[in-house]
Length: 189
Image (cartoon, rainbow, N blue to C red; front, side):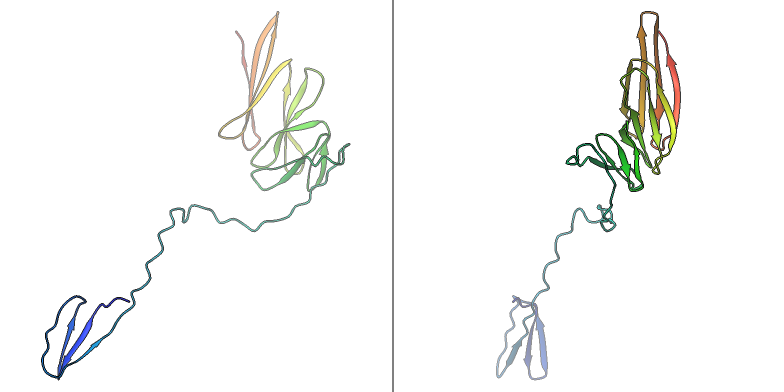
């Protein structure tokens, strides 16, 4: 305990002194010291206070699946609106059911996803799907050399090239984070 004041009395005289001060008294004197316990120190400020968002309670979701290999669980993922999907070897599904069997997930969007058709030929498509499984846009893959990339700010850029002896053409399409297609833009040498 620490003393923060002392009461000193001599008859009708009462003195108050801070700890460490001296009072000189004579005669019959009664001294009463009142110790005061200091308040506990405040905890240090949390440097991360207010940075973490409030998260909703966890929820359980069930997504149907089918595959030739019943031991394969698949790859779950979600879009920016909280919809949950499951990509398996032969299909993609969500809580509404199994969607399709040959397209493969490329990337989730704000709401829905982009999938690429799986085929053994140069042709095919890149599809934009709504969360309910409806195709909302298509970008055809026209030639043998095609590439797709995810943009840092969301969405995808699709590059399709025909580099044959008689034709050198590059076509670029963009799908933004909301599934809107811009393009094609053609580049020729």
